[in-house]
Figure 1 (tube, one colour):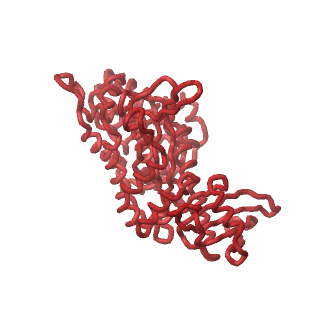
Figure 2: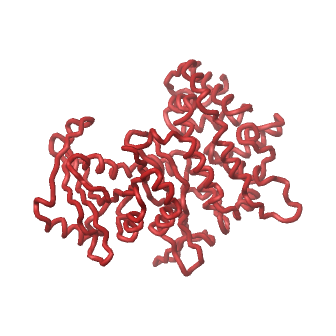
Figure 3: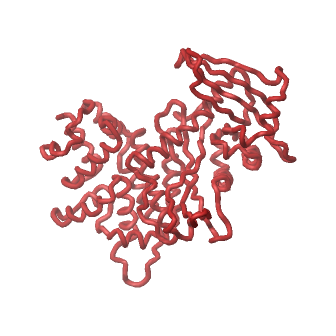
Length: 450
């Protein structure tokens, strides 16, 4: 551990962890299991190369690319090439399973033809490996929907780019609908397979987030009905066509934000209701004894004035502190019938959609994953495939936190996510590890010495 003292991030105070506590977690889940599932998807990549130019297998190319995102380091592969020259082996081989290390350019060129949906089985496996009972709210799963833009440029584009004509030229972008499972009492979110919003047929048709959401719910009807999912989303989703689609599925409900600016008919209807049809209710939440939650609710009101208009339940939520200052305000529509007994729980469900912003998108963009960075754009699928590698890496780290006590305790011993991965990168530059268990045992021993 002497060389570690040369790096400033090892000099910061850590939470002491017990050796017994760490070893007790080793039996819960092997750290390699999810890496093996990533590898299983990569093995199914179609090889676009022709002729004899196949020095590297598709597995080596795919796992080399994935390793960069898993360790949050674009320089990981170059460091492993140096280690291979000096030691005859490297951490890419022992931790990720690839022996030969292709160049960055070769990786980008070959992977450009691989559809990002090839990685979807990983998310199915991850979901099946979880104990979803711990994520249920009254026997139901909460799934938050939202889109994220992860690339934008006025000069770089490909066939999948979304295009927006502006006064100063065309803006090209990439985006995805990224559903996640949330729970009011869980710190993490569980990502589901993203669905990319892309310009499928060149200039003639632009995809959008709501169309992607329609495709996603249709493709996941069995999952939604089996788990009696309650969908959460912002104002974009509280539109009649999407709500009618959801309401055609048995045992699937929704709680969506509904802003006055986009629902004038609904708000006029609420304003004109008699007092007996518009109920006010106040809840003092035990966890925040000084906070009052004020609600206004109405059931069976029309969403708009259209012919095929769905009827919805409406709720207005405002939170005040003990001095009467408003801390939060929002309005929602839902397919659930509201009562004084359930309105607080349903409102909190709607409010929990913020977790997709804080615990998913914010982490992916600002906590080391750098989702918005252009790691490589390509001409067809590269940008989307690299984005899904990034989301897969985030998912593996999340699952390690949830299912492996060894990883969880070591991860929590660092002051930030960035510090944790900076430490891992430094270790993998200088030291060859036989496995992930070997790596984290090494880190654990180092933390006990500090």
